[in-house]
Amino acid sequence: MTILRSLRVGALVAGIAAFALPAGAQDIRRLLEERPDVVGLAVPGMPYGSPGMGPDSAREAYDVFLILRDGATDLFASYGAA
Image (cartoon, rainbow, N blue to C red):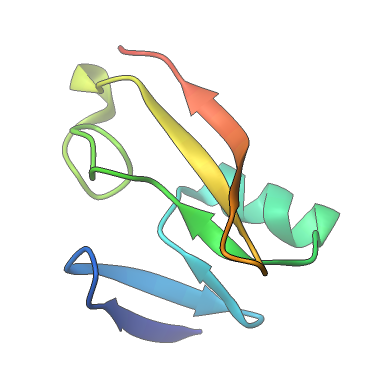
């Protein structure tokens, strides 16, 4: 696994199998199982309670997006507030 520094959001992301992945373990497992033709995943805004951003018990609602090769995004997963 390679750790990459994202200059746009100032957050650390993991690079696995040539994907950029700031999301949680279940999203990463799903991405690796489904193998869509994408660049990676994005969690805009670094919401409180998302992976690495505070306790899950105080989580804000947030969405995880696929980053498509043309730069567009598509909804991958949604998480409600705790």
